[in-house]
Length: 542
Image (tube, rainbow, N blue to C red):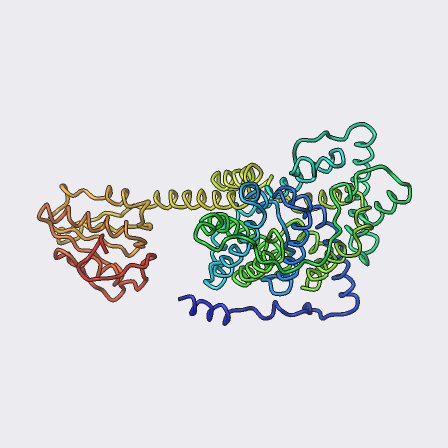
């Protein structure tokens, strides 16, 4: 099965998305835009990677190495050019318990196993199930993410050194006040103003990069005393080296890391595939879900062997890249390479950049990411959809993105099932021969099976009853059980029942106890939505 799925994946691989040139062709101008966009993303990645490393309870370089390796590999072979991947908070909050109890080596082993699971998901084509996420869930996801990005930046308004001392991004230290706070807010506002004005002046330089550059130059030139990247931690380091996780290779280790690996793989894929859809909407591209799963898996497998904490797609950085003009794989590769150069040779310069400039960039990302139109459509869409949007937004902020999406999909599915369950009804009339006809309308499935049973007056009906399914659709086993149950009730009363316009699958499954099936030329050929092993004369226990 896995071999067949891999052949299917290889056959459907979108090689056009592996190209290096955009639709309009590559030029020096395009190359400049891609490189500058990558530089902007790399600058924004530094404090994020450091902060998420602290969240996970590991050294900052563990987060930076993950951002470099995951970002590079997914940029090379990912499902969507323009996406940026790296160490993320959604994964870090899961990792912290593992690191605290078992140590960082178990984290590396978990990341390797997480990568294997993601590759398997890609080969099995499971990425396509992201299409089951309805639009209200996407709106709630985007809004919740914007709020999460905003809240994550608030940690930068604390006294320098607080972030590292507390071990996580949002807690424990004293907030800036007085003149330091006023200066920080002024620089954040200046960065945002530059980003807003810059596209109206020139697009030669990405607006976020211009904002970072101008504010950094002012701070360095005037020697302003404001928090800087170097206040978080030193980012200086060497090239990541190959490292086999130092854990016992036994069943006990597997029992420890497997639950974490499954959770991390699921969270990483959900966040990555939703980012894939979001970037696809902005760039007009589609597809690549399974390709992205494999890319994420390979990236995390390699990262685990090179001392990284693993990662997934980053919507904030992806938005920075797309809005800065990045449209090809060059921008993502450039971001990863620039990040590595920062670690190897440029740490002393990068550590001088004021955090206010990077916070200003992320605040503009928040403004651009939040679906402001959702505030107006809440009054126009069905109440269930409005509830799902708000629910997913709140759960995203309170828990994490993956839990929010799963909750949103479940609620949407239940709401859909309930609405369809209420649609089951029947037109009842009598034939000239005296038979009672029930013309069933609406889908028959687990949610509507009870309502289907209530449609019939078994005791009051004549000796001949016809149930016509021409306007219905039999969906699952519960529907078949309901049909068999009502037929059994009529037979117990000594009455003859005919079932018309059922698919041939239903014919075989209901060929039991002499139930009369009336075949006609217009019997439907659809298959059941469930994959049953059809055996004549068996229903319910098949």
